[in-house]
Length: 162
Image (cartoon, rainbow, N blue to C red; front, side, top):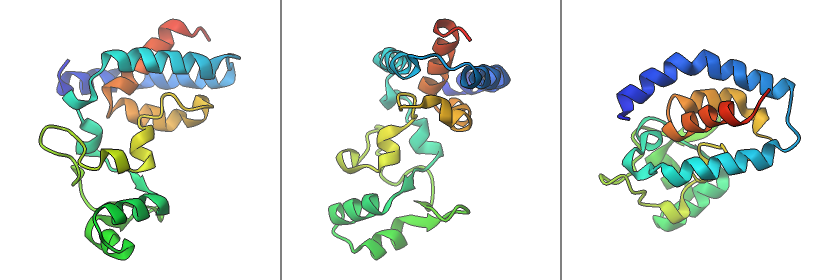
């Protein structure tokens, strides 16, 4: 599926996904974390993030102080210089990229700082995190950005009865 088709389908399914996740939160299965890990692993065994990289092209991660220090070291900059060159403070007082697409995204969709990437990038799209039910709003948002997140929710609807 190309990204335009995916985005159109994801928008159409957004209300359905939101209702499902709300029901899931109210009627929490005992083994949800285990089931989510299985679904996440299954979806990501079929999805090639390098063929898409939409997350890197359209959104930016939050940068923790540890992320800033680690990446400053990689670029041999002082943390203040790294911040000035790449980051800004958003409306929630978090450090985020000044621009998208991510300046560390290469033309072949590889991350130039992959081994040192921010924690938010390592965990994206957050579909295998513990207590998944606590991030419904973020999950809905991510289904509009990430085809894998969309597929995870679709597979959840088939495999988890609530």
